[in-house]
Amino acid sequence: MKNEYIPYPAIIESIQKESFDTKTFKVAFEDKAQALSFNYKPGQFMQVSLLGVGEAPISIASSPSWKGFLEFTIRAIGKLTRAICQLNPGDRIYIRGPYGNSFPFEGVSAFGGSLPAPAGKRQSDSSGGKGRDLYFIAGGIGLPPLRSLINSVFDQREDFGRIKILYGAKTPDELCFREELKTWNKMANTEVLLTVDKLEKDWKGNVGVVTTLWDKTDMTTTCGVAYVCGPPIMIRFVIERLLESGFKDENIYVSLERYMKCGIGKCGHCNIAEKLVCIDGPVFSYSQLKKFPEKERAIA
Image 1 (tube, one colour):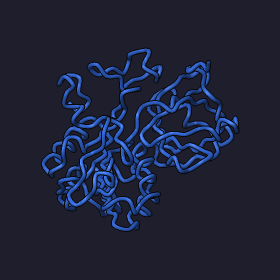
Image 2 (cartoon, helix red, strand yellow):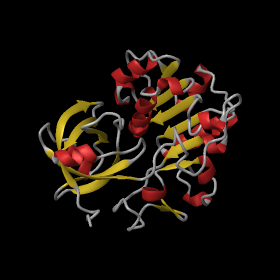
Image 3 (cartoon, helix red, strand yellow):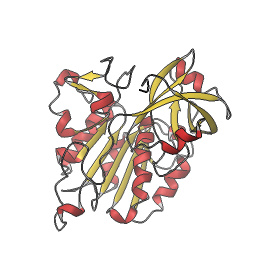
Image 4 (cartoon, one colour):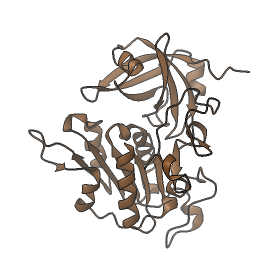
């Protein structure tokens, strides 16, 4: 039986600088057989480590349809992440996983049963987000987990309605995937809206928190599905605006962050009420979050 705690070596193939403290690493398993058998879903994470330095959960930023490699977008904020951000192509890291649940967007919902069918749609045509308008709202480093889902959705673009991507960062330099954001905005029936907290030279876009983008587009819906990831305070106010816009509790999905050590439900570090984020999450519907004690809600 495989020891879940033993990671696999992976080689960094390339590094893309996203901002002054954030980079996207493209990595491939050193073991080719492992690479061929590896599968994951949007929203899942890996435990990423450097021997002698440490280990941390990092969301997978690449799409499952991109075979042969994984991508991780990492901000240098701690001992391990600073060490990783000093590495170069050809260097080795260690990864194990994938762990956690995923964003429901096709087939049967990850939370049991299918989402209710929108008006005029057969139930069989609208499980998860299929046939629906999809809304992605991210703040700061919260875009990488959603990027995996966004690119998976674009792989099946004809299966969905309107797509809106609302993304905010502190400064223009801290916006991740800037070229990809331009590409997404050119996709059919897709709108990308950006905002920054602080006005800087040459920035001609919106200034303000991400919820100010509600004034720039129509967010009203009765059956749209929203996916949210970002700082807890951002998530709190985004959910308030989504509810005001007509989104149902069960159609709002949030990816939460918690301190994790094992990633497999053994250490208990990531518990919220009776849930463990590493195995019951990191993706939760708002209808689930509402049941958590107020003091334990990540959005409080």
